[in-house]
Length: 112
Length: 118
Image 1 (cartoon, each protein chain N blue to C red):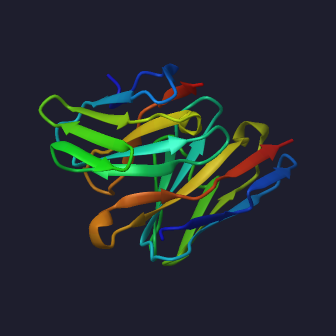
Image 2: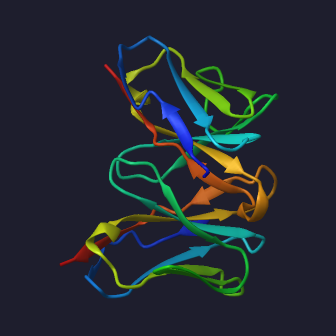
C-alpha cells in the first residue's frame, strides 16, 4: 500500500464549478498535510497546509482533514482555466526529519 | 516571503562531468533543505535531507558519493552530481523548510534545475 494515494486523473471540471481533489494516507501518526500545485515543467507551489481535523479556507481553496478516516481533500471553488495543473498531496509522516511524502498527484483540467 | 532560488535553471553537460546546483533561501533561514528528483510524469522523489553544519541524510538507494550535498550556511545548500551519466538527466528541485511562526515546518520549493546529460 502506498503511503499517500491520489487518483491520477485527469479530473475535468467546467469553468466556475467546484473541483474536489482527494488524498488518503496510510500512517495514522501523520501530523501535517500539505497541498501543492505543479504546472507542467515547473516546481511545486504551496497552496495551503492543514493540521487539525475540519476545514481550513483560504480564498477559493478549502482543505478538509479527517484523521479518523485518514483522508484529506482540497476543494477549489469557481474553478478557472488557470487552475489546470497537477495537485500534489504531501504528508509529514513524522518519525524524525520532518520529511514530506508526496502522492503521485491529480491532474486537474478546467474546461471553458 | 518564503522565496527559494535555484541556480542554474537549466544545464546541459557531457557524460562524465560534474554539475553543481545551488539552492538558496532568500528571505528566511533554513536549517534544513531537501533535494528531490522528478522524472517525467512521475512524482517527486526525495533524494536527501540537507542539514546546516552536518552531513546530509540520504534516502535509500541514493548514492551519497555520486550526489554530494553541502549545506554550509543557513541560506545555501548545494548538490553536486558527480560523473554525470545520461540516466541522471532529470528535474532536480530543492526545498527549504521554514520553521518560523505559524508556518510550522512548511517546505517551500525552488524553481528547479533541469539537467540534461549527453
